[in-house]
Length: 357
Length: 117
Length: 121
Image 1 (cartoon, helix red, strand yellow):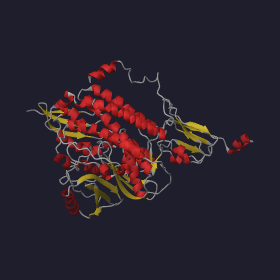
Image 2 (spheres, chains in turn cyan, yellow, purple; image 1 turned 45 degrees about the horizontal axis):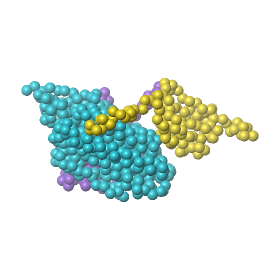
Image 3 (cartoon, chains in turn purple, blue, green; image 1 turned 180 degrees about the vertical axis):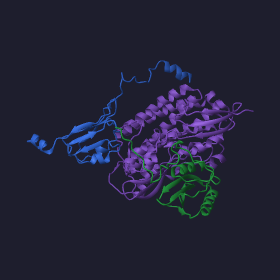
Image 4 (cartoon, chains in turn green, purple, brown; image 1 turned 30 degrees about the horizontal axis):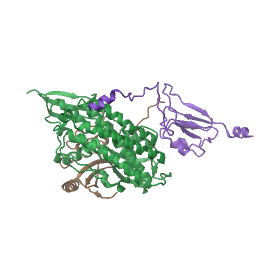
C-alpha cells in the first residue's frame, strides 16, 4: 500500500486564517496527521511590555472576532494587582458586550459550517441575521469591531435608556428570525447525513487532552469558566449546556443552543441594571503579579501580568483557547474519508490569529 | 424552507450598494478627531496618552503634528484634554494615498489676547 | 498569588504534578519569566475551577525535563517556551512559531533588543 502526502495548505477556501496540515492518505483514508502554525505571528507578547494604559488598545487587536473579551481579561488582571473592583453597572455592561460578542461569533461560525457542507443558502441567511447584532454593537460602542469600551475601573460609554429600548427590540427581532432558521437547519436531511457520526471525540480523550469550550461540552465534559462567576455572572441565573455524542453534529447543535442562551442572559442583564456610575479615571503604579481567566466564545482565556513598580509592564503571558484545542486534531482526524476532513477541522472553531499572536 | 424561498423572491435585496447609497451612522460613531486651536494650550497631555503615537507637540514652533493615517479614533485624547480642545465627530474618514502629517499652527497667547481686545 | 507551590528541583516538580494530575487536574499554561540571572517556569494546573501554580527556577544552560508523560497536552506550550527563551527540553523539537532564520534569537529574553525600522511614516 502506498502512502500519499497531501497538504491541506495555508490557503484554503474553508479556513478563515492560515494553517498547514499535512495529511497522509492510504486509499482515501487518513492514516497520519501533523500540522504547523505560525503564519500570523506578530510578537504581541513583546509589544505589550509598554505603558499599561496603551496596552488595552493593543490587546484588543490580537483577534478580530473575540476582541472585547481580550481587553476585559487584561483589565481584570490589572484590577486584581491594584486591588480595586469595577462599579456594578460597569460589570453589567461588560457582560452584555461579552454575550453580544458570543452571539456574533457563533452566527459567523454557523454560516461557515453551512458553506463547508455545501448548504450556501444557510450562509446567506445567517450572515443577514448577524447584521442585526453588528448594528447593536455599533449603536452601543461606535464601532463594528474593536470597540474600545473598557478601561481600568469601568467602561467608557454608558447605555442610555433610549439605547436600552433599542437593544431589547433588536433582541426580539433576532430571536424570531433565529427560531425559523433553527427549524430549517436541524431538520435538513443532507446536513445530518454529512455531520452525524463523523469526527467523534470521546469523553476520556477530551479530559486527557485538556480541551476547553464548546468542544468539551459537546463531548460530555461539563466545563464552563463562567461558573466561577466573574463580572456580573454572579447575579445571573444560568447553567452550562452539555451534550453527549462528541461528533460534528453535536458541535453544531451546541452552538445553536448557546446563541439562544446568550439572548436570555442579555435580557436578564437589562432587567436587573440600576442607574449608577460607570467609570472613573486615576493613575496607579502596577507592582506585583496576577492571573485572570474568562470564557470567550471558543474556550478559556488566560492572562498572566507582572509589573515592577513603574507604569511599564514587565511580562504579559497570553494563552488562548485554540492553542489547547488544536492538539485534538490527530485524534479526531484518524480513519476519516478525505472528503470529511474540511468540516472536521472547521468544527473545533479554530482562530489562528489568537494562536500565533 | 420552501415557504421562505418563495417569500424571498418578492423581497428587495438587503445589500447596500455603497458608494451610491450610504447608511446613516449613529450620533456617537467614531469618525475623526477635530482640534480647536483657540482652546489648545500645548500641555502635552494628549501626546502622553495617545495609544497609537499619532500626536507630536512642538513647543518652539507652536505646532501640533497630527498623523491622520495612524489615528485609531479611540478617543483617549478627547477624554484627557483639560480645555476640551479635541472633539470626535461622526463623519467617517475618506481613504487616500497621502501619508504625510498634518501640521496645525496654534496661535500664541499674545495673539489670542490681542484678538479679544 | 494564591495557591502558589514553590519547588526547588525536578524531582519535587514531577511528584507535585503527578499529585495534581491524580486529583483530576488539567494543565492550563506554562509560563516563562526572565529574572536576569535565572529563568522562572510556572506550571498552572486547574483542579475544579481553582488554579494551582507550581514554580521552579532553572539555570539558563541546563537541559530541562518534559512533562508530556503526565499531561498529554504539554508539548505545544513546551515548544513555545523552548524557542522563546532558548531552553533545551529533553525530547522536544523546539520550533513552533518562529521561522527557520529566526531560530536561536530568543525574542522574549530581556537582553534581546527589538529594532524599530526607520523609514516608516
